Every structure is written in C-alpha cells, then in structure tokens.
Amino acid sequence: MKLVEVARRAGVVNATVLHHFGSIDGVQAALMTRMIADLVSRILAVTDQVSEPAAFATQSTEALFDAFEAKPVARLAAWLELTGESRRLTTVREAVRSVLSTQMVEQTGLPVSVVEDFILLCLSMALGAGLFGATLGSLLGRPESRARDMALAILQRRVDEATLALKGG
Image (cartoon, rainbow, N blue to C red):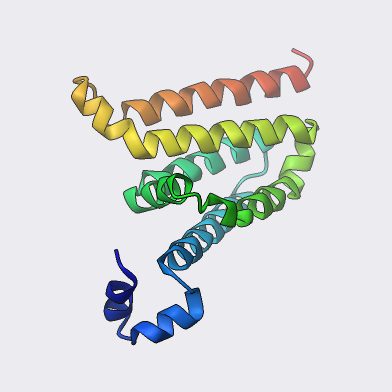
C-alpha cells in the first residue's frame, strides 16, 4: 500500500500522514507497535484470570498464536523483517520485559533466560504458523489448524516438563 492510499483511507491529506509517520515504512512500524501493545495487554490480562504459572504460560501462548493467526499481523511482521524495518520494533524487547516482570513469571522460579528462550520459541512458532500454517496444512491435505495445534502441543509439553521439574518430579 502506498502512503497516498493510507491517507485517502484515513480521510486525511497525504502531508498529514507524511508529517506523523515520515514514510509508509513508518506507518507500518507504528501499526506493528500498536499490535504488539495490544498483544501485551491481552497477555497481561491473563494474569488476572489465572493463579498458576503453568496456566498463564498456556493461555498467554494461545493469545500469542491468536494474534499471529490474524493474517495482517503475521504478514506485517514478515514485511518489516524482509524490508529491513524490523530494527524499528524495539517495542518487542519492551513487550518481553513487561511479560517477564509479571508476578506470574516470578512465581515460576525459572531463570529469566529460560523464560526468554521460551518466549522466543513461542514467537517464532506463532509467526510461522500464522504465515504458513493454514496454507501448508491445506496443501498437504491436513486441517488448516494442524500446524498451530502441533506447535501448541509441543509448547505445552515444554510447560509441563518445566512444571514437573520445578516440583521435583
């Protein structure tokens, strides 16, 4: 989409969009920043709904997959990476820090590096499933949700293993 199209759809003149965002890349980065903020809000809201760290991990991971399952989110993230604009997404680092600073993460007793690695894995799998999961599933004669379901099952096993290890099992 071109900057002039963004302006037209927003009902403003091109100069207004240019003034606020600088370029179409700026619009895309701002949009991704907003989407990340919304996702973090959804994940942090999970802490109000659950009392166990394992349930938090499960539900927040599902929220992450839900976010990337929306094609525009996954596609925009991929576009920013492919165009070299992903460097603008420093909000991802802040988003991860927000999640890491929750009481729920502290209750796990896991080292921060382990939780960060889990988040990295979740983000990578959610993006892949969001971009290609349904298409590849259909091409291979599998249900469109198969990649997502398998990824969530793998991640759930990691949560279960960590929970068991913390309980001394």
